[in-house]
Image (cartoon, rainbow, N blue to C red; front, side, top):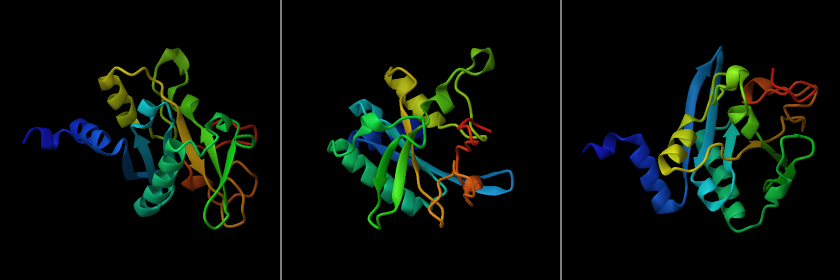
Length: 179
């Protein structure tokens, strides 16, 4: 019975069974309802952990599962994933909507004033990723790639005029720094 209440054992069991697991959470950040979902287990395959924000749990699961399948099959040019949003890997969904994978590893694990790690971005940090890999003895940080999708006008969250900035985890200013 004790193991059923241990979230890290549950996560490890799911990763053992499926090769990865997905964590979805929803919380209020300020006055906004904040949704985030991310994978755990991909770094064991030398792949990034994937993250998506602002989508329902069902849509997040579909996007993440598709990314996992494509990445695991070697169908993504993951060497093109970088922290510069306008230069990073460009993908398209089934409706031909452009999507980008942005490397946000430094946003969570980069040096913070006084050398403290890890940091939070807009009040969020994927602590379960950190805890899982530390328990496994795998060096932190692991790469985290954020799936970015455009707003109704086709603008990404770093572009002027985008109407969904508050839905996204990482808010880049015009110079691509956190604000």
